[in-house]
Length: 346
Image (cartoon, rainbow, N blue to C red; front, side):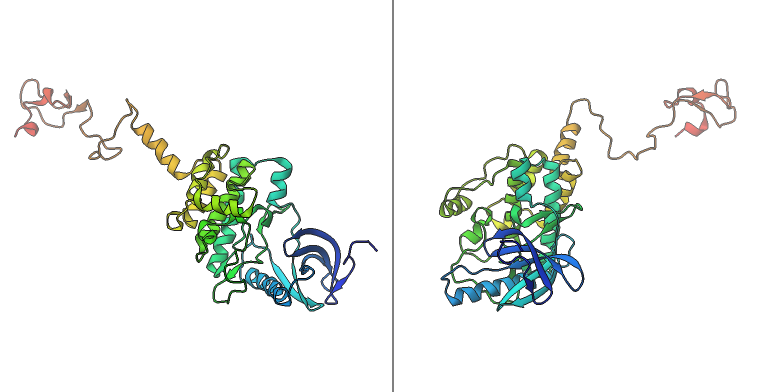
């Protein structure tokens, strides 16, 4: 028996806790074994801080249940699968698939900033998960590297829907409370305005910036300073983003209406992940090539593959009409050798 509190405890008579996988602001995630189906799972536990009022404890539990509800509504390979919500000791425990692999935050901390191509692939997979969530009426509201798992089987998995906003449900946060990580918060959320899918896209842009630069663009020493930077400061130009820079800049526009849309953002991320520049850069390259001196231009009235004039040499089909105009004579496109031929008169 290990000295770790909770180890080997059986939850709901079925899930045996084996070892902690990580800790967050709302509790601990355990590696556990399902004694009924004989498979390993991840179990999320919430521990209320000592002295927390009962109303706040209830709010934490309601938030945990909402995480299970929100994640269960989203059917996508890039969203963690929820198997069960067990009740033990008057608290809900979320039972999820066990994703083996580090988080994006761990990967960047251990190996440094990612190449733009790799970051673009991860961003496209996260965006696929977000689009599926938005289609199901779910806003994640806490997209950050710590909530993106890089599975050993190659999948990129978005986790932790604990503060997700579900369309049609009532809010469980206090009025004026800002939830989420300040440095990844969209400006409209920092100002207390109603968030939308564009708010998750902003967080994705910050995630991509942090993945290629190694640090988030608006991080300061205090949450208040960070939120002020999110709202007021310009984006520091990315130095390592390469072809990913236009996508990051498009996602990090302060006005949600001007932000890069999910459709176009995923298309451009897939293109960068495949090794090419974003479509906007392709268009600029083609325009520069077309405007280069000496580049041949095709006439818009000429059909490709069809000559605009007769070939330079051809046999005359006309019978002889006089000296120098016999049948079979060669003539050029100027008709100089066939002026006496009736075919060329008029």
